[in-house]
Length: 477
Image (cartoon, rainbow, N blue to C red; front, side, top):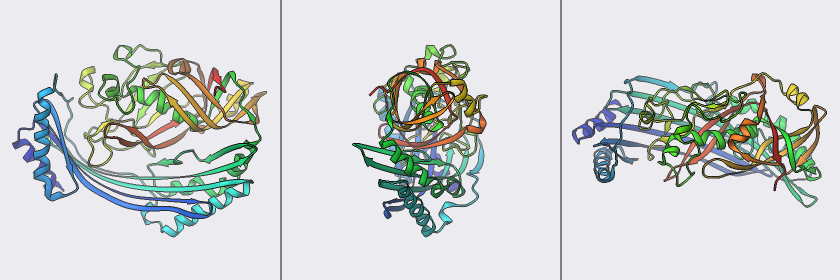
């Protein structure tokens, strides 16, 4: 590998690149889905290739291939593209300083998920899905499991040589009930693609899918005849599953500096967090502390180095309600007089790295969940996201959850169906006056964050505990 990458970098130097890097990436993946007692999908595959970035006269060029014997052609293509781009380069690209590093990193795992027999994984899902139907009139029961192993070798003309092996696991259940003119779904541990982490197969076993399935099925059926979530202004307590989506959409995306600068707009919009707001804008209440932390073990956005070779970091984003940092790259950070905070990642070998969320976490507060409910007295509690909508600047939003419960006399009361809430990002976070503590804090994984043209899917994490928001508009359809 050293000889292969060294040859590429030497050719880039000879071709006039002021800087070049190469990423050699291989991925192994497996996905299993069962539905109503049958294996619905079982896919496994591998992908491998390399991508070369070059910087010529202040302009990027990029090319990639799955064929090692095409290295000379790939470098020549990257150099040619950079020179073509220099015709309209504007002010050019300047990179923040980065000391060279030689290192290796592997996700800590107890059980390699690719060494677990396929029959065992299928049996686990079938048993969990079967138990969903004990909850009553479940029309559709689903269970899924996915594993991923990615190996990345990064080398640059600055002298870095980094090898990383990242392992991920994820799984989840869904029960869909039909009746009383309603269709309702309950999920576990989270909706959409389930719950994911950079851990081994032990993470799947700890979820205890089968042990939670009957409850999930019963709750899906109970939602059919539950009262509608009442409209109006309510004090709202959100579970970490719903907060993870809220953080992702209204905190994570707005702080990506490429969106702020207009580099990214076509796929996922821009941002209301213009540069004049840095360091002074009141994003939330003093109870709101959000960090970008790629260093904490287990998060889906955890690694040792980003795809520019920048070390993983823990960076405050919102400190006691004040906006204090963007997510940056070696190219964008100098515009703020900073060095990169390590958030450049690419979706595989044939994509250029772009600024992506790592683990964007709401830091734990001082409350227990029971204390939070008692202090609230009367309100609404919601958990697990069902739908989301937010504008291109990440200001106006409306989210729906799978289920809600009325808070009565400081405890959970009757279940409510079709809960939704709406708000404006800074007003919403300014209404947050209490966050539960470390005992209720969970590292939720999101394996499908879309961004970029051509599109890229990033794997990111969001740590959160239940939190309270005062006077939120609830029940708007």
